[in-house]
Structure formats: C-alpha cells, structure tokens
Length: 204
Image 1 (tube, rainbow, N blue to C red):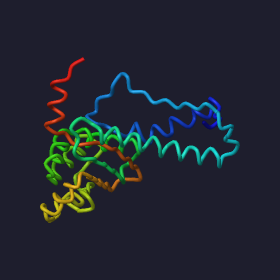
Image 2 (cartoon, helix red, strand yellow):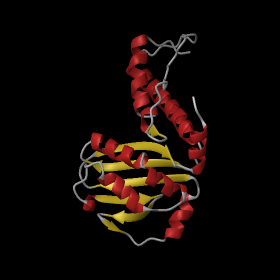
Image 3 (cartoon, rainbow, N blue to C red):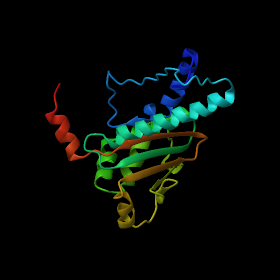
Image 4 (cartoon, one colour):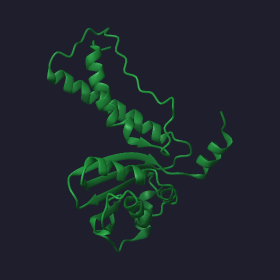
C-alpha cells in the first residue's frame, strides 16, 4: 500500500528479482508463464522521499522476494532437499553464476543429494564443464561445512558424518575457487523418483 511512482517500482523490482527469483532453479526449465508483479495501490499515503526510504523499502522487497523464491524450491515436485550452491573466488561474477547454475541443474548432483551421498566428484565435474576453470587445483569444496575437496585433491572425511548432515534436508555446497572476486548463489532442490512420477503422469 506504499505510494510508489512507476519509475520507483521499475527500479526496485528488477534488483529484487535478480537476487531472488532469478537465482532459483528446480530443473533448469523456465516456464513461458513465469511472471513477477509488484503492485502498489498507494492507500497508505506513505511515499519514498529520500535515498534512505528507498534503500529500506528495497531491502524489504528483496527479502520478501527471496522468501517467496525459496518457497518455490521447497514446493517443487517431489523435493526432499533444499540445496544452496555458493560459488566464491571466480574470475568474474558471470563465471561464478555460470558455475553455480551448472552445478544446480546437474542431474547427477541432484540425485546424489537425494541419496545423501557426499559425491564430490559429480560436483567438481559439473564445475569443470563450464570451461571457467583451467585446473582442478583451483577448486575447493565443502558440503554442509565439511571439507571434501581442497585445491584439486580429495580430503579425508567421514562419509557417514557428512551423509548424516545432508539428511537434515538442508544442503549447502560451498565451492571456492582461487581466481578472483566473482561470487554467486543459486538455490535448487534434489531430484527424486516422485519428481519423475509426477512429471511423467502429468500432461497439458
């Protein structure tokens, strides 16, 4: 009910969307009907008169969009795990996004998470497919804060401990590169037999 001008709305929404809805993926498929709308009727009479007001409202809209985006992932067909893919240290932000999306949409990574399998090989392989990495020595990986791969070499870790941590349904894949300051975050989910059943039986 804030009294937004069209120009303010057009500035606010893309920033929020690019940090939320554009950072999620269930299986990499974008629907032709995917839409985000920001509507403000102005009934409160409250206006955004200075940069501080705009910044505060921007933060609120971004937080709301992020919460809604997370709900899409948690409500995905057959989803049992909520996965956060964090990439840091890429050469550019574009490279970081490319790597994060490749990992998030990788079917073998998703099915490994379904089985609570800390399969670092699948994740590192997905990173390498992007051609943004020249050597595996640039890559380090942690799963739920457990280091499993460091600077190109597997780390001795207790698979049962990491697998147990994954069974909580919340999985964080921290991918650290030794290239630059690029970083990106993508939220996704696992791929279960229920996903296959629902999408094989459903038709339009």
